[in-house]
Image 1 (tube, rainbow, N blue to C red):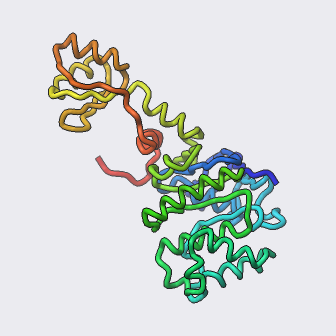
Image 2 (cartoon, rainbow, N blue to C red):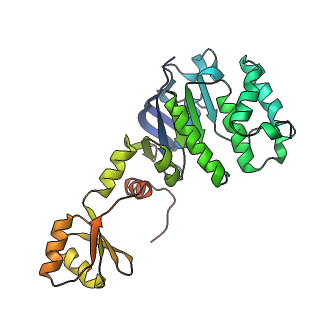
Image 3 (cartoon, rainbow, N blue to C red):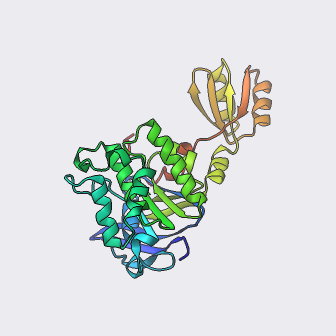
Length: 304
């Protein structure tokens, strides 16, 4: 089985609501792909279609080249965590995984391996209903890993994790991709994806907005932007705006300038007699790049 997820011209509607509108992308082996978009963008619907929980109206979603319902041994071919709360509260963590192993024809020894891998070996017999959110997240990740699949999907995997747990999940995602698996991570936390994702698929209103490497997205968001330090912020912003730049105050003595290279900014300020004491290239964050891409695709946003 090839370790890929392939979504092609996917359409899904619920009544009069269009959830996914012609979406296409591929999750390749050996990398972590972030799957992001505003609320209502169609992420959850897409994940459900990939996992055979919903049927598409048209198009396809393939795991290893086949739709989910055609997989011979699903737990060995794709692992997923969509809802960490989807477990019996009275059942112990080990028994929960034993049930999955028996259902999927997996060796019992695999249960203890994944419990140890996610750090739950010491609480394996405790009822899952008494687990914290972070512990339930770890159990959900264990369930996804139990079949040692080449394809993995995680929805908000850092939700509820403490700082140590967040550090752990970053390392886990990188190591899984390093083993040649295709890893798709849906998340609202751009800071986490910036540290762990190689590639980003951005959607809005059910349509593809971007399908690029994280490095390319950051470079594009940083392009032609400079950070200016000056005690004459208002004068600097006026001079630069008159030259066609977009200048935004980001601190009492800091201005972010878009649309002009650094040497042109220096030239304009010098000619205008506006003193400054620092200028440097702007290094955009993944959150900035994401906000720029999704600006027109937010369904529920702040009224202005």
